[in-house]
Structures are given as C-alpha cells and as structure tokens.
Amino acid sequence: MPRALPSLPDYLRAGLDLVFVGINPGLYSARQGHYFARSTNRFWPAFTSSRLSRTVRGALGTAVLRPEHDAALLDFGIGFTDVVKRASGNAAELDLADFEKWAPRLLRKLRRSAPRVACFHGLTAYRPFLALALRRAERAPALGPQPEVVGTTRLFVVPNPSPANAHFTLADQVAWYDRLADFLET
Image (cartoon, rainbow, N blue to C red; front, side):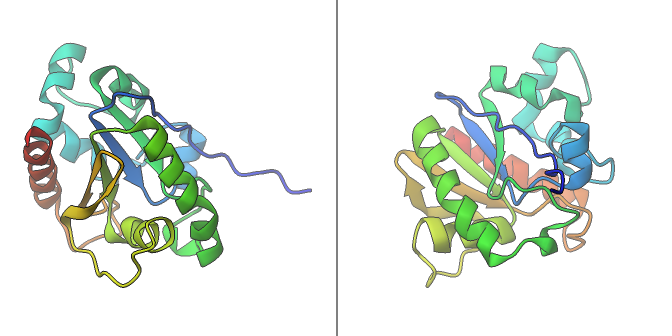
C-alpha cells in the first residue's frame, strides 16, 4: 500500500477575523509543515509588506514574517486552510473528484469556525468551491469581494501568490492584501 502524502493542518478556530484559503498544499510545503513554505512563493513577502500584517509584525517583534509563523497567526485572528487537503506537486495534478470530495468539507469548516472573512488564493481555488459547495456554478467570479457568504463569513478572492501565477507581481499581491485589509475594516 503506498504511503499517504503529507498534508498541512488546518489552523482554524472560532472567532477568527481572517482565514486564508489555498487551493491545496504543495508537496514542499506539506513536507516542511508550513503554509507557502517554498521561498519563491510570494505569500510571505507580500503579506509582510501589506497593512494586513502590521499588528502581527509589531507583536512578534519581527520585520519579516516567514512560513514558520503560520501557526502563530492564530493568536492574531488569522488562520489557514485549503479547498483540497491532498498535497500535490502543483494544482494541475488535482482533478474534479478532489474538489467534489473536499469543497463541501471546506464549507462545513467555514460554517463551524465562522471567520469574519475567508480569503481564497486565486480563482482556481474559488471557482470549484463556488460551484461544488455553494452550488453557484453559473456565476463567473472575479478577484475581490464576492456576493456569496457562508453564514456570517464574507468571501474575498486575491491572486494566487504562487510563482506559477506570473500575471501578478509582488507589488500587485501586496496591493491585493491591502484591499483585503480595507475589506476587513468595513
């Protein structure tokens, strides 16, 4: 029997302000045990440079946040999870069955933890959630705030910070996290 690939734990609990939702854990991140662990991923540099992390950086006494800080963000009202919890070399290795299995589970997790905002990293993460969990396959989503809600949780989509998403620069990613900070303040 083949050994199961590692995954990443959910960093969720009731009362969070924000939950970052990825497509699925990359193999490298899963093996390292941290979200967005690959040094070429733009998440941590962009998050560090955005207004979203100002309080966290100050409280932790660090100018630069790194993958090792992912679990500590729970203390600041920020969590992490994925649409699909199966790790893969890249998201292209996922198939419809993965999303059919995992998107409804994510919906239950969001209902149970009820964060103020769930931020999906990329339309590739949000579209299957929208279609399979929220049953809104007819709507074509765009980046930014979404009209759908999960209970009291508002939904927001930012570009995927993966280096494979070359359409967006680090500065673009920072700007999207700043828009998310504004959205959290409303």
